[in-house]
Every structure is written in C-alpha cells, then in structure tokens.
Length: 67
View 1: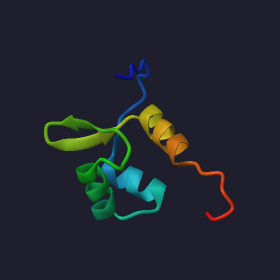
View 2 (view 1 turned 135 degrees about the horizontal axis):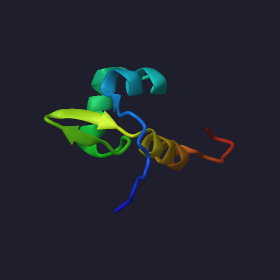
View 3 (view 1 turned 45 degrees about the horizontal axis):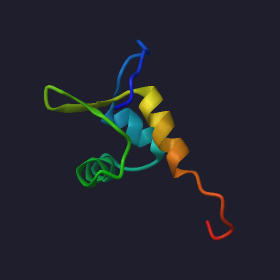
View 4 (view 1 turned 30 degrees about the horizontal axis):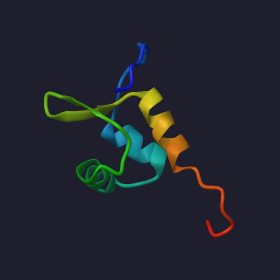
C-alpha cells in the first residue's frame, strides 16, 4: 500500500479524463477493469490524487521503437 502525504486537492473524473485526453466513459472503463490510475471512492464518486496519477503515468511509459 502506498502512503501519500500530499494535501493537494483531489481531482475529479472530468479533470483527469481531460488531462489524459480520454472520455469520462473511457476513464470509467479503466477504473472498472483496473487499468487506470489509482482512485479514491468518496461517497460513490471517484477522486484522484495528483501523486497517484503521476505514478500511473510513469508506469505507462514505454521505451520501444514500436510505440
């Protein structure tokens, strides 16, 4: 389990989807299948920490010529 100490505000799905360049529906599917960034369920609404988003983005980075 990752521990975060940031007091940065949580991001909503719309903000994260816009940042990633995907639709909110795509981000929802990513949450459902576990392929998206870690999120927090706040009363049934997903919220994202900036730090968790950065970690997920780092994990998506590829270093091949076939990208």
